[in-house]
Amino acid sequence: MSLAENIRMYREKTNQNQKELAEKVGVTQQAISLFEQGLKKTSFALAIRLAKALGTTCEKLSGEDAVV
Image (tube, rainbow, N blue to C red; front, side, top):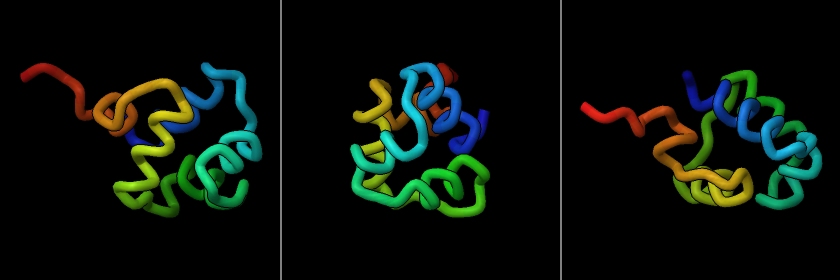
């Protein structure tokens, strides 16, 4: 899954709406919407805050946690 898909999946899994997640990580609800649509990229620092707010790791959030 892509980062965009994972942000939405983890947000829904943690029963947060976009506004709640946005407030936790210090961005607007519109930014969360754009991240989830894949129309805007996150910075590394923001990815860390997103992962923490969503109860996961950056690797899982980005879809890069697969064992090779």
